[in-house]
Image (cartoon, rainbow, N blue to C red; front, side, top):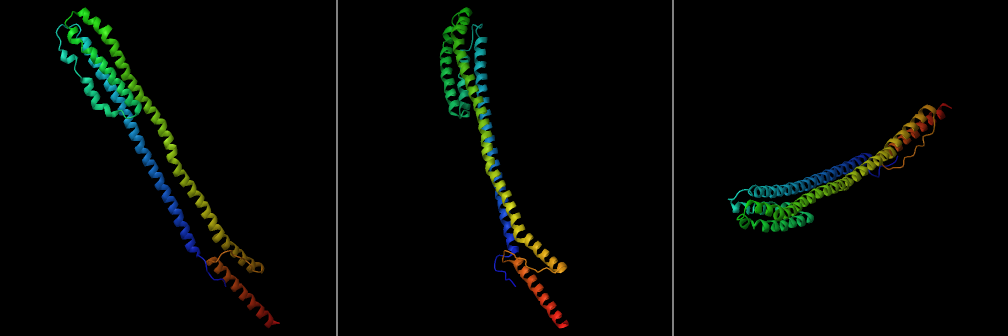
Length: 264
């Protein structure tokens, strides 16, 4: 009778299940980690871009409000010059300057401040201009101030466009990053499926097929008297079972031969 010298079939199945469980567990961890990382990245990027766009639009609103205020005072002979030459835009800009984080946005923001300085330099002429009549003030506003203001406004709009382009670019990068992040999870999943197939092959080769051959051999011997010569390529309990079955059949044959010799 064969002895069980190798790893037992029960332990083999148990170890196979442990390996499968570990593969699936780590695959899940990788997937959760990558998707969590991607979710945080997307949230931060989109939030920064939206904040930049909103900040640029806020600057435009402040600039237009100041220009409208100045235009509305052209017809007035008595105005508060301090109100016209205030630095509300500079104050607003200093509050939201940190919202522009990309190099392109920072360069565009610097251009806005240079254009604002040029605009305020012309606005600084208001105290002297308001000493003249409405016709002179109107001419100064449309021929001297407005061209400078329009350049200033264009730089703000350019800052808005840069922020919007950054959002579009980051959206494309997010899509690429999503594809990259899903690859480790997909590889782990494929590896797990391959391992399942291998484990299925292992169970069939070392457990199910040998048991079926042993069953077929016993059936052939019992029904048709065929010689039992099943071979099992293992040293586990299946091999021990096969050896035991062979010993029983050999013993049975010996007993039958002994009875036949006595009857003769």
